[in-house]
Length: 232
Image 1 (cartoon, rainbow, N blue to C red):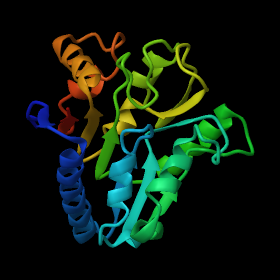
Image 2 (image 1 turned 45 degrees about the vertical axis):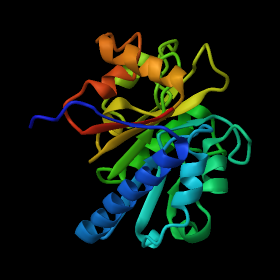
Image 3 (image 1 turned 120 degrees about the vertical axis):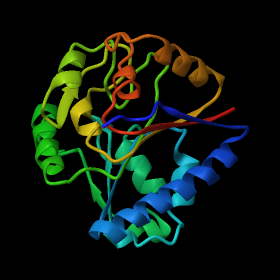
C-alpha cells in the first residue's frame, strides 16, 4: 500500500496547534471506539505536550474505553519529576481522562533490563495503536532512539517491542519502544514547536541516514501515515 508523503501542518501559535490537534485526536479516538470498542493512544513526555494533555483530559470522550501508554520512559521512579509517567499522570490522566487505562513501562521492583522485558510483555497484549504522538530532539532522536546510543541499531531493527537505551548525551537510562512497535499504529503525529525544531525537521527530511538522525526512520517509512504539527 502506498502511503502519502509526510503531512506538514504549520500554525502561528501553540494555542492554534493544540485546538486543531484536539479535534483530530478526538475524532480518531472516537472512531476507534466505534469500530472496535477500544482506543489505544501512545504519548511522549517533555514540556511541549503539557497544554495538549491538559486540554485533551477535559474532552468528552468515552475515556473508560481508552488505553494510554508511553513511547519511552526514563529509568527513574514514577513519581520523579523526570518521569514521563509522572507528567502524564499530572496533566493527562485528570478530569474526564482519569477514567482511562494507563500502561506503565516501568517495573520499579526490578532493574532496567528486566523492566524492559516486563514492558515487552505488556505491549504484546496491546493491539495496533490508533494514534502515536512523538517528539523530536535537536539531535534527531525520537522516543528514546538516540543517535549517540550503542543500542540504536537494535532499536531500529529488532522485532521486540521495547528495549533499554543508554544515551551518552542525555541523562538517565531509558526504556523505549522499538521502531517496529511504534510503527504498529494507524497514525503517527509529531508535535513540535519553535524555529529550532523546524530546522531539525528540515534536516531530517533532506537525508536518509537513519543512524545519524533516527527520526528519519519514522518520517521516511511507508507503513503508516505521518503528520507533523508545527507551531511558530
